[in-house]
Length: 377
Image: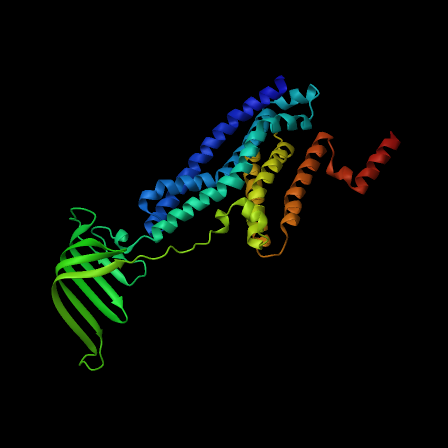
């Protein structure tokens, strides 16, 4: 029918435009964040775009929720401003009549939000964790960048090679500084190359000098030194090790695993994932109940209210996650308290406007005055 189709078409246009704008903003923010991580050495510079993509994907449920909320508020504000709502009200349509077309349009988006929060959120976080872990666990040779001083993984060794390198396994003008057991060793060589000896990787230096310095109370100045020239010198830089068993962070754990884990941190993460889906439903009712525009005034107030409502609700979900994680409240109790309370508030607000209730009529004095006025009439 005309009523349902007109609302759904306008919601689709507004939702698409809002979604594109929000995704563009989030991509710009996540790109800056990914570049900052690469500059700090947390991720590989070659993986910046992948980290940005996974990060945006992990926040897609929040983006969809906000886009849907802003779209409903924007469409209803426009209808009030253009007096279109007056036409629908005059034709016998009440405010609750908008619930069905709005939810018919929104249910695929709500299902997508639930899937993103339950499935895609942990998967994207796991991919980011793997990228960062693989980069941090790379060998000392993989850390070397031509023309730069690079520290080893344990901080005991510093490498430097010249930019003029014919391939990735050889280098010229090699410098290595090592601190071990209180002894400082500085090694420089004209050339160096990598050899694999069994399961170990060895840096072989040619035509260089080795300087060792250590504390010696018997020396005149308390420091002993030894200098030696060499034609060939080997340094073990990558020793084969058994892969370390890593515990996945709670954000990257599968939702089914969280359901089977009674730990507070697992329950807190579940409250976050389920809260995004429940919030999407409540936001639709809040938008329908709260939106009202004076045709002679602007529509910016409703947009500001929508953004403030989203921020407050979003922070309450985060607050509940912290409370559940600290054991101050249970998962079910918080879901009922927050999302059930918001649902009851939105429905009460909606029916108040549908039946044209006034808050003062709900008070005892207001009802008494109304009764006396009816008796006098």
